[in-house]
Length: 173
Image 1 (cartoon, helix red, strand yellow):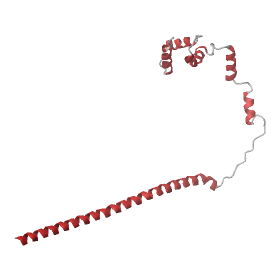
Image 2 (tube, one colour):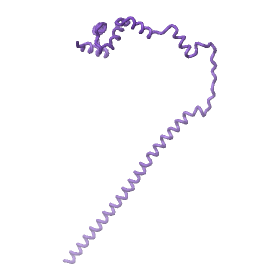
Image 3 (cartoon, helix red, strand yellow):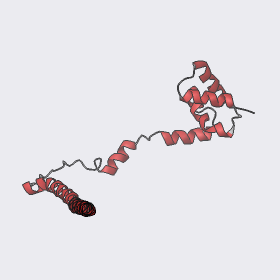
Image 4 (cartoon, helix red, strand yellow):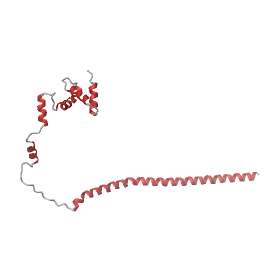
């Protein structure tokens, strides 16, 4: 049997978009004896909501669930006994501790040390970067100077060649 309608109603229910009639359809469906296996996890939710208790379950299951969900009448005594308040009626004496200024400032010392470490690591990490950048700038300046010198030499050679050509032309003429 196909239970797509019920699955669609479940989706709408969990998105808070169902009407009261659709919720009653879901409650009636899950109150039946034959509920598909893949929808069984939702059964207790709808039967508990509709009947206030789990009527669709066996009486043994109800007793186990009731015992598991309820607290015993001696719960308070047990808890107080565990934490030790219920056993003694003696007043508790609280002794004040003296805290020195050094102990008070210890967290600040730790925080200052952490900040100093982080700043030192950051500074150390940047040093090689600045050096390499400075070295790169120096090498670029040297390269530029060399290029300028080469250009001057080319210009000088070109001028010398042009002077030689002019002299040859003068000699030929």
